[in-house]
Image (cartoon, rainbow, N blue to C red; front, top):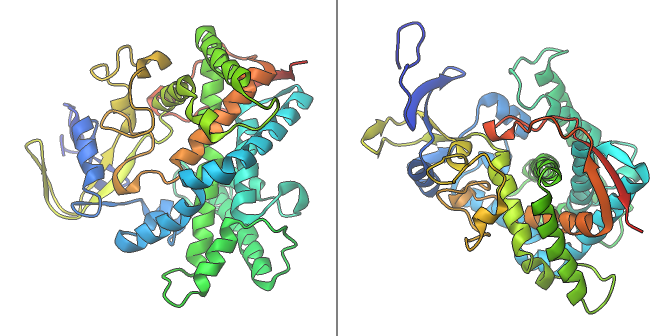
Length: 420
């Protein structure tokens, strides 16, 4: 473990030992090792989080389960965000919701980019998951999530006044809203429309005799999906806004692609179709490049469940390994000028799958179930942003800090107006 007292080695390679919150840990910045860890999920490696993080995301969350039960929970979610669901219904709903949000941006004229994208993403996800509409409910679910997010990465000291305590209180309030919605749905007093949402589906599954599911797990499943939608996609969109504002050549090419879609459309003013979405090649290049540089997940933890050999090293059972996507995404041996925002580097490459060198949506059996959902939502947002609005970032001199794995700071001020 390195020098006495200091406890750290002074020599670092692509794989090294350290400790985090008292736990011995191996840190891997090696693309081959990272890929192997994801592929050996459930065999040599198992998902792991600190006890404090389980308190935050829920001990019955989908990430807390393994094997067949994890596959079952993942399949329940996938049913609602699969390519089939997106093609047949969700893409049209997202289209309408995104246009409505952008019109509200235009009426404001000025707004914080992160707050605006977070509200846009959360509004649709909450309605689809729970039939929840912030404007019609006295319990403000998004406020609870904002409090939750503010203390998510903090020292686990649960004392009033600390960020961690505020985070737990945010979770508690959010879970209360979710619990109340489940209760209303079960009693038939939710006052909802005929729209069938994810919570309705989960309640149907709970009634089955042969199910693993109970209501606590179902509520944690909804909570985690809303968290993922609220934070990850909105962060990616905010980073995209900053990069696009500073790269007029990319912006021009993106606009050209989407204006061509409008020219080819048979019915003027119609929603984006699945065929149009699949034709957005440069858009997907922009999304991949944004995700590569944003590095929204700086580290992914796995527990070593049995002794494993990797590249001449032995990792003992019981240790933890941390996979670091940023180190791969910013590796000059894999990406030329890795800190440069260059969507053209994706030209001719696979745009819709993870690989050893691109793990924005993790990998293996834990590949993000909402990856397609997020990419469709980002594509729709970019389509209307570049074809219907004039906008600019007014504090663009500030540097983006996300390539180092640091969260995108608040304060990306946007001026926006609708084209006449």
